[in-house]
Image 1: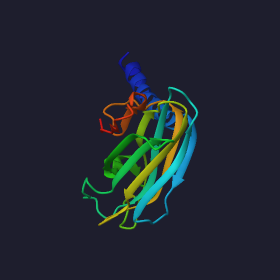
Image 2: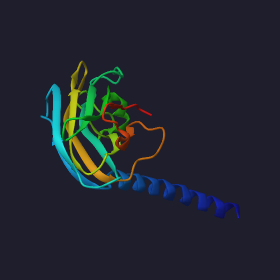
Image 3: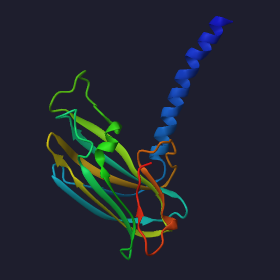
Image 4: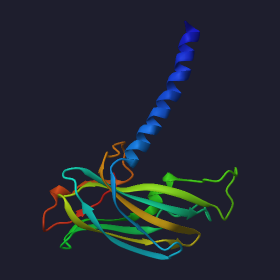
Length: 196
């Protein structure tokens, strides 16, 4: 009896871990990509802007950032790589604006190489969700993103933003990214993003 319980538990936990991994990956890739915009590979200051055509109604959308980061210094300051993310309607009325540090998302970076210890020239791959939101309705919106990509002892490269609609929100709490319902937006106020 004791052996059968041990065998069951030794099989049960890896299956649950694998299921959680697959489920999270499916959630991250769900929906339809509506816009992609990339920065110059080695730009020091990045300013991206693109039109986003939302076709779904009352469904979640996601803004995800993919980038490479250098590992010049493991003891980086949490305030490095400040960015501003804003989302406006077609007439230019600001629906959402957030300013924070991209270092908040360095936990979503990994080293893709086979070497055991990355060296000074190693670049880490990063894939982070910055914002999940419900837009006021279908239509055209304007996404703007500004980032300081070059700091002392820390460089970001290959920065790309992806916008998807009809996604499953990543509801695991506490959130690192911001979740906002922009349908509650009033014409005379701006929704400020707050990391949860």
